[in-house]
Length: 329
Image (cartoon, rainbow, N blue to C red; front, side, top):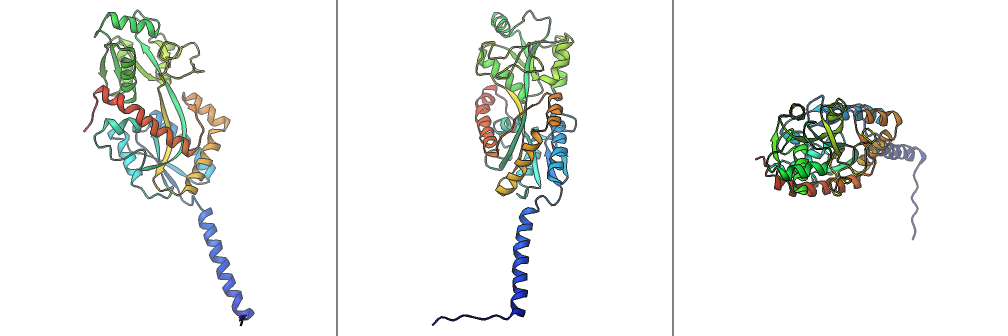
């Protein structure tokens, strides 16, 4: 026998209201992100290129998400302190990291970096890259990369290259060139790229790699000589300077890169919201102009593509770091 229950109108109306209210609250919970300020951790001191880029991103992302994005500088241990903090943060989308190529290098450079770039984070998206430039003291009798290689081979151990410190991206770029060219050039580490650049200008060291925005003023003033840029194609800000590929090193593609990542297990819908906002920011003409002024080549993409890129970068730099002999316990 089939039984059909009957419910009085007075009893089903409250029940229906509760059910609809619960359904609405679930929808609101999903739609609410972000409902409070987001913290963007930066592993470098205020004033540097990573910090400058992060502050522009924070402002633009905040406007897009209609919620404040607050930059929090936590320098130290080559940016590892900030990375560890984000890796251990609650995976709810309210703590992000402005990650840089440094984190990929640190996976091998540090005996215990405190985090795994591939497993402790969810990629949000790549922001952009800053190409580097190989520069020499203008008194050095070379005008091209090939002339530098020839001179170095004729004078083994005589030339020096500077960096902003052992294991930094500038140092590793120099080691990569040294290995690819098979030349004997001595590494001289400094406490930052500024004193290293000053040493090139003064003739205390022979050459160095550094970000284009940093060395461009010295090149334009004739205090440094540019031999090549480290991108696959020539760059708009220095169109007369050849690439390393044009100079006989087809696989030499070295740039500082920057992006956004979140703690592992951050919900996919939160990652999607962040990436969608980021892509809108990266496509704005005014944002592109600001990045151009900072020497940044903006790169758009998906979380998946950025995650794969970070993994490939970690694998790529590992043997180069090991060959350099740089190690931090």
